[in-house]
Length: 296
Image (tube, rainbow, N blue to C red; front, side):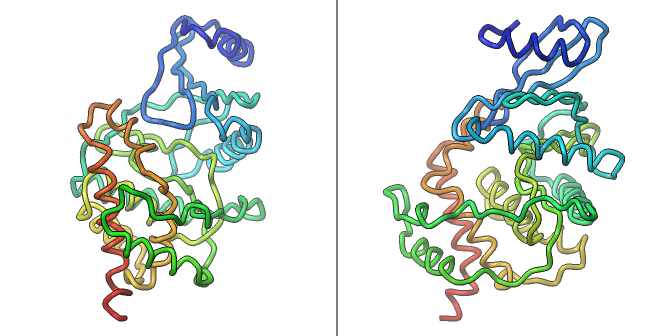
């Protein structure tokens, strides 16, 4: 057993009606402690513990939302864990096969990602829509900080976000869709995890978030190719200028410093420095602002 979590593991045994014989930590996340559990009958599960603030303070709402969405999506085309038991800040869910695939932005990876995101956006929750999306770029984040090499770009971004959000058609959103929340097996996505932020809002916001993550992980070209793949899959004819607001909203959401997402990448064996992630985030901002800058 892992020291410090005896009480939570005991709760999982009681809720799961199995004796747990092996516990191992899972890497890749930064809001929660994730534990892979194996029972004496060979069954496996995953225990999510919201151990970090401010998420722990809001664990009841976040984990209840995750459990609800997992029940909604059960039987759909989207591979999701099954909620077994909930006692915030703990959520016990079924184990899914597969591994993270953070080290590749090959064409097949981006195409499968794009199709999975399109499937999520096509899901109809009926009358049980999730909450309206929330901005992760409030005014308090719109501040020039020392690592920025192009402060004028960030000034343009902050100015853009002072404008009203564009009109959009509402869609079922994962809201945190990126390579770090996808499990892969034999070239296919075997699991989409982390549904605590599921929302109703513009599809472009989900696309933007996945693209920004790809840009920091693999460079600006990967973000462009993913966005193009999604648009081909959905017939979306939006251009970068039309999507600029949502892209900028997502990018600014990583401030004051994107390094919070970098350590899990290094834990997974990738050699990405804090400075490289920052530079790539700024390059992504330059790319999405280019249409607007060129027209001024």
